[in-house]
Amino acid sequence: MLPMLALLQEAAMSPESAKNLGLFGAGIGFGLAILGLGIGMGRIGGAIADGIARQPEAAKEVANGPFIIAILLEGATIIALVFGLLFKLL
Image (cartoon, rainbow, N blue to C red; front, side, top):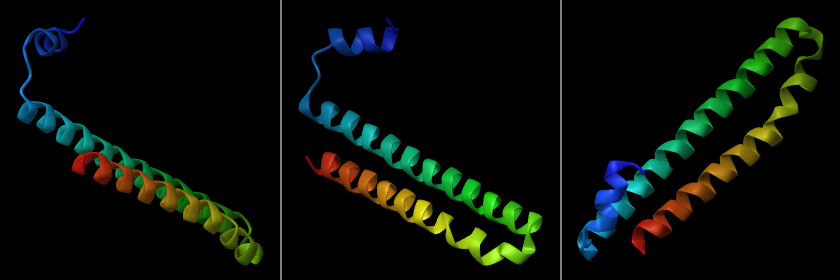
C-alpha cells in the first residue's frame, strides 16, 4: 500500500480535510475531462485535414461526418464538468 494512503487511513480526518480532498479530486476530474476533449478534437481535426488532403473533391463529405462525433465528444465533456461541479458542491 502506498505510504500516503496508509497515513490517510490511520489519521482521523477532519471534515475540512475530507472536503479539501474532494475538491482536489474534482479538480483532477476537470483537468482530465478538458485534456480528453482537447486530444479528441485535435484527432478529429487532423483526420479531417488528412481526408481533405487525400481527396480534395470530396471535401464536403469528408468534413460533414465528424461533426456528429465532435458534438458527442463535447457533450460528454460538458456532462463530466457538470458532474464535477455537483460533486464539488456536495
